[in-house]
Length: 586
Image (cartoon, rainbow, N blue to C red; front, side):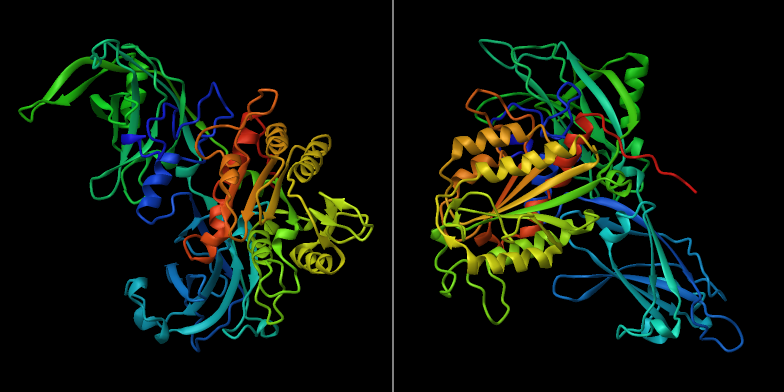
């Protein structure tokens, strides 16, 4: 898309702002193609929510002789290699065994990652009390206890509060009554507040010879260091010098640079107007710099702002064309955390490919080979890594598990059979899925062909039936396969029907097959799926990742599969005006 950082060269669709006229748009406020592309191209993770942790403790050990302990908390994040990395520290509270720290610690919450947290509490020696806490050498302080948890354990609690018993460093010590640490998570306002905004232009300069310009807007925000990162662009309005664009929804998270200390409303934005060219070489019509407060003033006073352009002499030339703000409505936009902490759940389901192309499970070169040494095959790896994340959002942790493309003990080829071989398709926990999978490899013969339709329809039926009992459940189906599907149109039809249901589908491709067809199902190119009857999918519900890219170290299977899931979740509930449950304060 040329200048628009989208990766879709020459595309005319809007990016990065939710259209109020099309609430099912892929470009919802929780997922931003422009920002994602910018951050990923720089090796950074773009999707995040900032969470503030408030800490308190009770019944801490008293290490002092003439007074009480002077406690401080150090928060560390455990990385994938097991190493601990410090995130932040509280202040020191003097003479208190039941402290409530004022200093918050901000962490970046990423849904698609398992984020282990470790809290160390120290008794700070009085000789260090006048020094900044960041300069304190922890080896010089007395250790009071350690607490560990996953960030998702905190944010999924109804009140986002978790109390953890303190232990010694070696994992023991609960019986010694080392005390307890209470952690409360609060999402920062920067990721919740949003503005509905409608922009239009008047008397734009014409950049085309034989027709009128095809204008679109690109909005960027300033980042630390003075550069700009694009946060969204409008759709293209063809052949029009007085365009009115569809409404955008801009979250504060998009607008503000979290590394800057300016007021959110005053964070500078650059609004550029381009004439679209299919070559991607879009022509700049004009630009201007305004803050959100400035845009609100334009709306309130019904004034326009003139675009400027750099002249050949290096001076800014004020243009006749103007930008107007027809709508500016600030609102609270409910986040993924708002939903899951109020009782909304993600229900995990899994379907495993039992077609013959996987190879004989008894042979070490089979994709289904279970290594006696305990090394996980690709199927086991996908189940474990994805399941470990989603299980925190499922209260009963009973997961439907199926196989497809195998010959069951009854002698029939089934494209959706219960993985555990019983009448019930549910198993207990991730361990139950792994055990059912291992058992099925002994009882089910590999066969074929590879059909997705029956499994997707079964999952969709469960998701649809849930609506009669509750509107607070969302279902996630993980399909793991090694081959090219032979029912592409039937699969498309099933996905289009399922796009109206609380359901997302994650597909992992294992082995060396050509997975081009899977990329078609994953509508990341902006082309929504179309059924055989011509019906379009209301939203994108599929995410695909080939396991070979994971094994080569290019990506993490969890991050690649789950980074779009919160956005798909929010698109479904927001488009139906389903709000989080009210919190009841005792």
